[in-house]
Image (cartoon, rainbow, N blue to C red; front, side, top):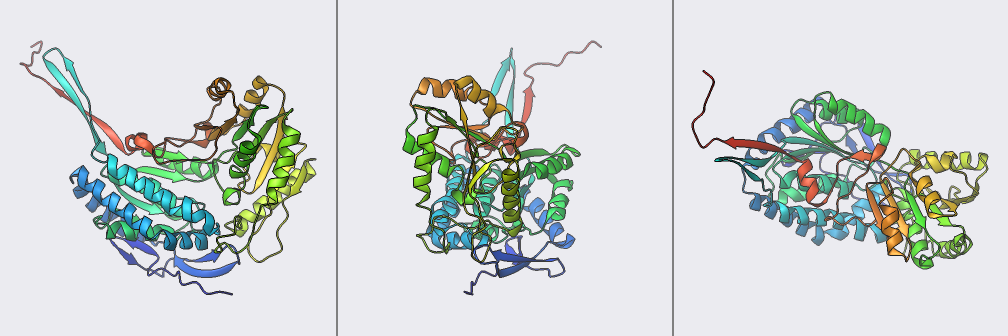
Length: 485
């Protein structure tokens, strides 16, 4: 098997430097394409976590008083460094997650750089309001929350670290970030680059570990906010733990999002949207549109064209830029997907594809499911793999009602040439992020997040800065104070 030199200089990045404490449990980093162990890190001990929180608390006090324009310059320098090293960082992302290099070169570190640049530009724009009450008046300030905990998912480790760090740091906070134990390498590089760009030590610390480390960070009294990207069950646990001490939270969780394709939609675009919304990153995207509702009149043509387009699938070595489909990131997730497909077959669904591919690593062929009913598990439950459920509908009202009949509310898509209908339909969809005639694009300037069980709060855009600050109101009396006695 090939050798990969990706062992970090330390398992954690704390107070501006790599550190190691081998008393923590060993965590193997596995290359999903082959199953090969390519690095080992150690979970944070209580001493490592304490050092991270102490340094973050110290550094945040000074950072909050730093000129916001200077904070912005640091973030923009970091964005420039990430772009300059995009290929190196993308290769690491591929090794960490198994996603094809063709994808990571455009969608991961570059997205992180966009967030750092965007919030770097907005850093000086934390303005308050004034209001008058006769001769008296009042004003508001937006103040940083303090030390924040970030908890990442395993599907976009570089992007998620940047999406959480950028607004937190721009608004004067510190962050202790725990990557997923499945993909621990990329956030370390983000921390290293931030310090190289001039970020004072302690402001963005990375500690490794599983749920117990995340729980310690979530419940610590010095932490003012928790920002999590993860599954709905994990989100419920973290939200409850944070609520016990009234911490601020942002929860970006999972979904079972609908794509509604009307009979007048452009066929080629609808198929492209469905492919992007189901098979990009081997289906390991929280906002994926895994319930594809197609108008009955268009369904035969849609399925026929989808079958033709699937011939363009090119699985292979993820480090080869001609590869456009990679493995599942973990063996556990591969087994979850295969179990879902077995259950779908048992419930009467027609499953085209979906076999475990005959190669080393964690590979599942893309699956298209038809002959479905809305009560089947494959239609109701998040699978988080390359599985597309195709259903048909007769009219607009039916499509909207069925699209909304879920506990989730992360995303939704509508494909139609009739823009009046598009806006009318989107207005009735109970989802936090929607696309019209497009799917899964998330620029840094657009708020992203869910409703219902899919989360609370928003990432990206100006709105995210509000989630990392709180309002302080100051009343100014301009005359003498009167009292009854």
